[in-house]
Every structure is written in C-alpha cells, then in structure tokens.
Length: 104
Image (cartoon, rainbow, N blue to C red; front, side, top):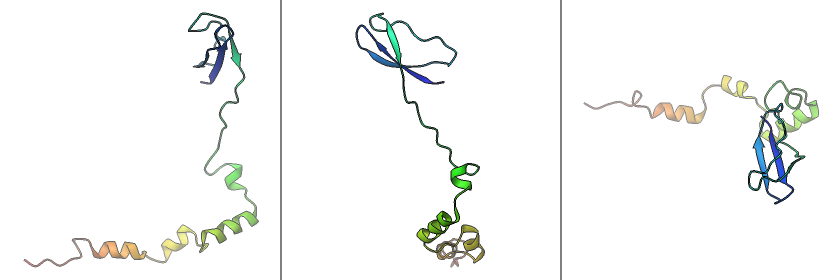
C-alpha cells in the first residue's frame, strides 16, 4: 500500500497515511477536523538487485574487466574451490577432536 502525505490547511498539521490506491483521499484533519490537502510525494525508489536485471546481467566487457582487476586475483569462487581446501579450512580440520589423538 502506498503512503500518502496530507497537510491541514487550517492548522498546518502534516501527517502520513497508508491507504490503498482505490481508497478516496482524506478530507478532514485528525487534530482539528479542518480541510486537508494531499501533498505530492516523491515516493520510494525501486531498486532491483540480483540476477535477472539489466544492471547485473548486461554489463559491458570493460566494466567486467575493471571489476576483476579491482577484486585482486580475478579468480571466480568456483575456480578457487576446485584448487582444494584453503589454509583456514585445513587448519580447522587439524584442530577437530576426531583428528587429535587421545591418551587414555
């Protein structure tokens, strides 16, 4: 539901109301029962994120190259996972109770 902003012409009270688009505009101020006018608001911008949108799917090749250069190695996550476990994964595996020997 959109948020509509109103201002009372009598007392100057400004307020916002969530209303369906099909609902009629308010006519009375909730404070003084004076006449209100609906203000034009800018609303919220819609931002589409993720795959399937122009900003992420149809980047130019120059842009993609710059992103790879700025990220450092330019190796994708799938390529790095094929090379084996990382140092931190190896260190964690060495410290697990299963890998340590117990002296009973």
